[in-house]
Image 1 (tube, rainbow, N blue to C red):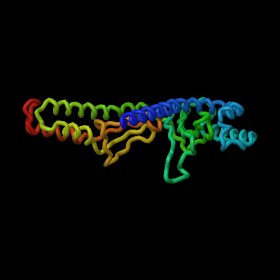
Image 2: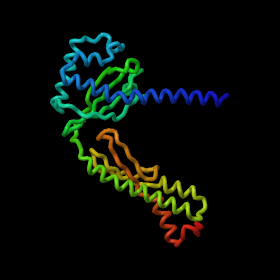
Image 3: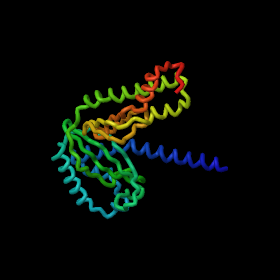
Image 4: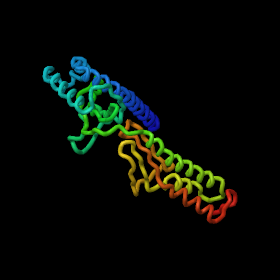
Length: 257
């Protein structure tokens, strides 16, 4: 009986997760459509894309809203121009915090959408109404950074690939040996990758002394330019066990460590 309840709960959670993911995939497009209408001064279309039936928007004065949209358009234009932008969804979330002011309002989702022109990039913070799937509020974060050259970013990816290949090689050597408790050695190789070195497309190289890369020593994310990051950890576990094999001159078939 308990198993059935568990499976039912798991199924419901899966459906909720799928709905959230599907909604997230539309946030970028809805933000793009809204901003394109905004930059074209099509404020009536912008208002049609806003959740005007939401409780917080019921008493909104349309003329005041249009004036606000005009000011918002001028702000974007003065900082980024009015040409077509490229868009990328960075993340969507529902904030729940003990600090009340940091929570997203009930039945809303907050999306961060990166936009860029030929030279610079910024971020829209967009609050969506979960019921109508329309925009409740939109503004820009205080971020304006030069659009990065991605060539260096992709070249840096060579180092994480080397670390991944090295750790896989060490694991195969351990597997072929007669070492006891091999699973402990595998865990050491997979987990003990520290300190970590990262390269972010926008911010460049960073070093974290106590940051463990527990997935074979590498990490990667790419959600817009601002969240494009390669990370690799120094493979201490792999180096140690390869050293032990070499030091004792153990072949893949007679190791007994």
